Picture 1 (cartoon, rainbow, N blue to C red):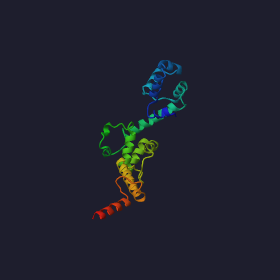
Picture 2 (cartoon, rainbow, N blue to C red):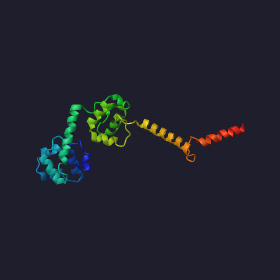
Picture 3 (spheres, rainbow, N blue to C red):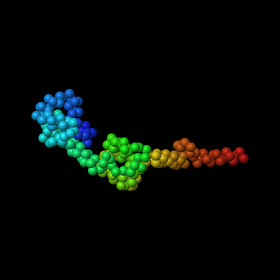
Picture 4 (cartoon, helix red, strand yellow):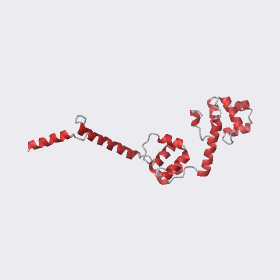
Length: 206
């Protein structure tokens, strides 16, 4: 499947076909006639009211010069999404406390997947992380979390904790550097040599 079609996963193939026809300025009726498809069937598919069958999908792919099997792959992903919504509800089974600053009744789980995955991996427990893995799939979860700092449990370090850790590490490194090399002082951390010089000046004043 091409990169363009990867974005269409979960969308009915009929809507994708309609979009492609519009984008290429192809008349829907003339296109249907060239396929020798029944008007009622073809129009229902474009409206996402009917399942796209293999025979018709192959004809459309040839006519639009699409990768073979791409439309049926979209149909499968669409069917999976519908079945998941039927059996699991409109979203993953997560405790509302994870989203205390968000009204989850208005949260679009598919569009906000990046936010949901990040939030659950920062604040959720193992059961909730497993729920997100199952709902979105490990491939999408790993894509979102790639390169992010993780705890041994697999959970993400929160952004706030990570920033504090980085600042602390930077200050500690700067303090060490000031002891080792007086020429590379970290701001706010005088070297040992400077401290001795200050003590000597105080003793002279006395």
